[in-house]
Amino acid sequence: MIDIQLGDMEVEVVDVVSQYADMLSNLFDFKAIKNLLQRPDFSMIFDAMHGVAGPFATEIFCRRLAAPAEAVINGIPKTDFGGGHPDPNLVYAKSLVERMGLGANAESMDKTPDFGAAADGDADRNMVAGSKFFVTPSDSLAVIAAHAKLAIPQFKDGLSGLARSMPTSGAVDNVAKQLGIPLYEVPTGWKFFGNLMDAGKISICGEESFGTGSDHIREKDGIWAVLAWLSILAYHNPDPSLPLVTVEDIVKRHWSTYGRSYYTRYDYENVDKDKADAMIDHMRQSLDELKDNHDLKLADDFEYKDPVDNSVASKQGVRLVFKDNSRVIFRLSGTGSEGATIRMYVEACAPAEGSIFFQFLLFILFSFISLCLVYSSISRFVFPGSHVTVWDLSSLSVSLSRSPWPYQPLSQRSLYSLPSFLLPLIQVSSFLSHSLSFPLLLPQSIHDAPTISFVITLTSSSVLT
Image 1 (cartoon, rainbow, N blue to C red):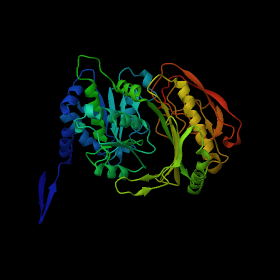
Image 2: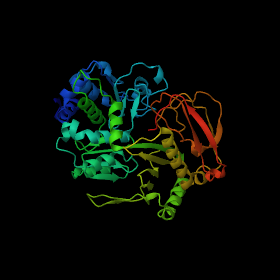
Image 3: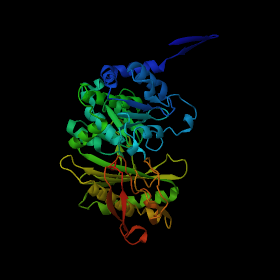
Image 4: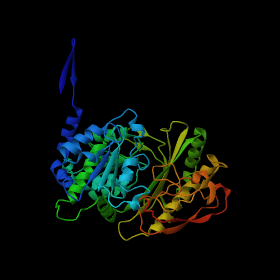
């Protein structure tokens, strides 16, 4: 702390970097993390994306935990973020994606860091990855919650409760159930978590848009989430003479214990607001017709009553929840710069016991997508008569949407002309060692088109996230 005298005014300059690092050193076992970082078979990289996280990351990871200086990249804050877009996902965190082997160049990479992370411009959101292995935000929240009492001293006395935003995958719900603690499902918006934290009802919370936080502050905290993951890795690797337990190992063990949620989100941006409102109103009016469906556990327009102040937030998203807890959700977002954004969420749940073939899970997920398209009547309300070309997307991780996943067409050979609302059709990350083919069946009721069946071969693609 430095005092500066300017005439009759005294200015106190506070070293927030040191204060923040001191606080985190009391929440985490820095000695255990430092031992992990000193292992010859372990390396990490943190992409600050030229945001405010840079000085904090350098102080904590490099100075206090003794990581090499090159462990922090893009660490100098810049007003234009170095010409990039400081959003920690697989599209915009390009430096991290390439170095972690998550891009199209993955097969040619022999060695990547064992742990990678990024934070956005103001350091409140985070992305986590292992070597050639991406951890979804929903899985990250669930893994942190499952390990909290075991690996993070901050929670040595246990968790008071957990919370997630309604559209976020239900992966953390399974953890709360097994731990016997409350799980709160709240509308999108961090203020709902804040009320619960202020009242001492939750210890950890998160959202599918890469935000994770705990009750150490009233906000999401990207560097806190990264240290939580380093603590989990340190917990699983106490003996440097044993083989390294990797990020991928930890996540797969989690799936084998709690089950797995195959989850994706599609964004339809810059949609005419009146058309988007008409579509959502149509879906709300048809909810009563679905309530007797024997496959559904719930069909509603999500409403939340805050257990702290009893305030009510209504019309937060149309939900179809199936008996196995798989879900399809539609909600409107006001975060777009123009018009409205329609967000469609699809989640297929796989149990912990037994195994489910990847092709079968694809079929389940695509069945939900088809259900979404039919139920929403999105072609009638929003995209009447418009079409788009589908490209040959073999031999890499693919995405036919503007959502945050790798996308790079290898050829311009047109396969089919499909309605534009089918853009967010396929999302694949991580990598399989063999090629596979699968049929995609579209119901006849979509866009008054005949049933279409075609095959796309993915020669180096991975599991749906």
